[in-house]
Structure formats: structure tokens, C-alpha cells
Length: 421
Ligand SMILES: Cc1cc2nc3c(=O)[nH]c(=O)nc-3n(C[C@H](O)[C@H](O)[C@H](O)COP(=O)(O)OP(=O)(O)OC[C@H]3O[C@@H](n4cnc5c(N)ncnc54)[C@H](O)[C@@H]3O)c2cc1C
Picture 1 (cartoon, rainbow, N blue to C red):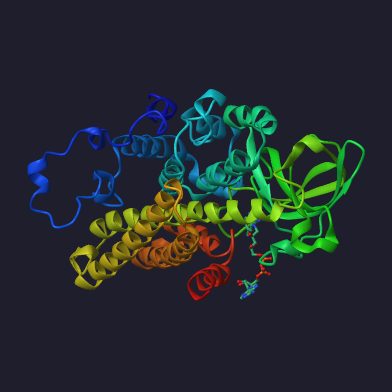
Picture 2 (picture 1 turned 180 degrees about the vertical axis):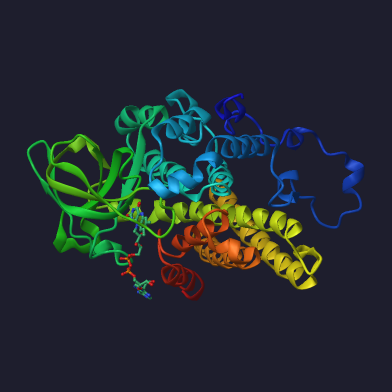
């Protein structure tokens, strides 16, 4: 297979839609009372450009071929084999927005959303590994890193190093800026002490973005982001959580005990870590929306196939109108969620405001994922409740969408703030 890397045209060097460059025939304009929009804006939100469609197809194929056979084992063993991670790097999905000159695909945020969705259809654990790498870690580095940090870390993140993003602590989750990890200035940098909890990719990561406060009296204005390498003295990865869903994705405690971090590894400005955190999480939650629509699609695909095969009362259960209507409703909700996710991602790539849309898409698609996977279990009957069939896992995996990168209540808070102030 041609690696996806070679299949993603660089949006900076190529027009996403070649037709956009050809002049419009004047005759077609005559009958319109309003200006004809540019071709891009006349497309359906879910109509993909050629490169996007090719890219998504390649990730679909990869997921079916390389991931699907491992899903059950990875869930049971709560681990992702390193050889699969290496294949994700080879595929090009671990460095989607990193410029080609630094080893990445030089593609858009929307491609990351497509990759997360396509992987999640098969395994949401793999999807979140890719999601954190792209929408949080690489995104933060591209946006807030200086030339030196980018030069040192982007090629590594493109070449095999997994990243993790550590904000949460035992005492600060929704109230993220109440974090207690302390950064004290030293002669050559900072010394960090504290504990991070719930950190995705903790087991696999070689590079960690860690938030600590350099000035507790300043409240959130003391928070600073640091780039820490796994082998920095004083840094250790602690306990791995045993979870309900996305079991193969590692969720770990991180311990910082007099961890010395060079000044050059401050990400963004000292005291501006809250901005790094808020702004990357605003974008990251579009990725979680993508994870949720991908897994809901996976559950729906299984359910459609199963209900056509399973026979009761002398016919396929898909022949009962009650079942058809339940599936039709699920497909409709999923379509709405996908439109919201794609819209938020496209707004973000277009440089337009997207904070409200990102919160809405995560809120809604995680609720849809829970409903669709629950329906899938129902329509599988007893077979939906056992591990020999795929839907019970997707049902368990769906729950996390309403918790991480801001709980549903916190998304509602963001939406309310955007529309009421
Ligand atoms: C599998 C997993 C992976 C994770 N990965 C990461 C990661 O990679 N990096 C990272 O930094 N963190 C990560 N997290 C942490 C995650 O972001 C937090 O768990 C989440 O933000 C919720 O925080 P909390 O668990 O402390 O819950 P709490 O903040 O204690 O919330 C408990 C309940 O109270 C509600 N609540 C809290 N405050 C309010 C309020 N003001 N108004 C209304 N309701 C409120 C919440 O909605 C929730 O229902 C992960 C968590 C899990 C489970």
C-alpha cells in the first residue's frame, strides 16, 4: 500500500479544489439575484475533497487490515503493541499537521479529524492515541513553540516519538487551573514537583507537555507549560489505570520529583500556560467529537449487518419496522453529529471562530455515541452483552466522550458563556 504520507497534498502548496481556479462561465451567473458563492462553500459539509477522500479511505483500509484483528486482544490486555504504533507512524497519521520539511504530512487539522474518525470506527483506543498526538501535543507545539523547540521536537514527534498532554491532577479536573504541580525557577531553568493524573499515552509517550504553576499567588496567571522528556531526571510514569472503556489506551499517573527542566523547554510564555491549555483543548475537543462519531459509525455498521442476518419470527429482524425506525433514528443523529464535527474542524482550519461549535460537537456527538452504541447492544440481544461480538466494547468505549477534555457540564458551561454573554 502507498503510505498515506505520500497521498496527502500539502494544502499550502495545492488548491484543495482545482475547480476553484477555473473561471466561472458568465452565462451561469446571469440568473442569480445574489453572488454565486465560491465552489468550496457550495459543497456539502460531508463532501470530501479528493485528497481528503483518498486519505480517509487509506486510513479505513489500514484500520480494517492492521487494527481490527488486534482489537479484542488489545482490550483484554489493556495495551497497544509498539509494532502497531510504528505502523501508525509509517502511515503518516502521527504527524498530520507537522510540515513536510520536518517529517510530517503538512496537512490540515481536518485531516486529523478524518483520521481519528476512521480509526475510531474500528478501535477508539487507537483513535485517542492519534488524537492526543495531533490535536493536543503537535497542535500546542506548532502554535506555541519557538523555533528552537520546534526544531528539536517536531522531527521526533513525526519520526516515532509519542506525545502526551498533562493538565489534570487528583484535585483539579474540571477546575483545571487549581493545579498544584509547582515549578520553581533555578539557575538554568525550573524544578518541577507534583503529580499528574489520568494522562493518556502515558505508557507510550517519550515527550510530555506538562502544566505547572510558576507562581501560585498569581492564580491561573502563574500556570506555565513545559516540554518534558521521559528520561529527564526526577520524572517517572506511575500507575496505569484499569478502565471501563478505551482499555488499550494507557491512562497513567505522572510523578515529578525535583524534575529539572531547562528554560529552553518552556512552551509559550511563563505564566501563559492557561492560554496554551484553553486554546489547545478548544481544538482537541473537536478530535473527541471525531472519536465519538467514528465509534458510533462502527457500532451502526455492525448493527445494520447483524440485523439483516439475525432471523426471528421467520424473518430478518431488520425487516421489522420498529427495528428499521430505531436504526434510521440512530443514523440521523449520527449524521447531525458528523455535520457538527466537520463544521467545527473546517471553521478551525478557516481561521474562523469555532469555540462554541467545538463544545457543541463534543457534547452532542458523545451523547449520540452513547445512544447509538446502547441501541447496538439492544439490537444484538444477548449477543450484544458478550465479548464475542464487537458492540459491547464500543458501548463501554463511548462513555469516556462525556468525561475527558471537559465533561458535558463543562461543555454546556462553555456554550452558555458563548451565547449568553
Ligand atoms: C480515560 C481518561 C483519559 C484522560 N486523559 C487525560 C489527558 O490525557 N490529560 C489530562 O490532562 N487529563 C486527562 N483526563 C482527565 C479528564 O480530563 C478529567 O477526568 C475531566 O476533566 C474531569 O475531571 P475530574 O475527573 O476531576 O472530574 P470533576 O471535575 O471532579 O467532575 C465531577 C463531576 O462534577 C461535574 N462538575 C464539576 N464542576 C462543575 C461545574 N462547575 N458545574 C457543573 N458541573 C460540574 C462534572 O461535570 C462531573 O460530572 C483523562 C481522564 C480519563 C478518565
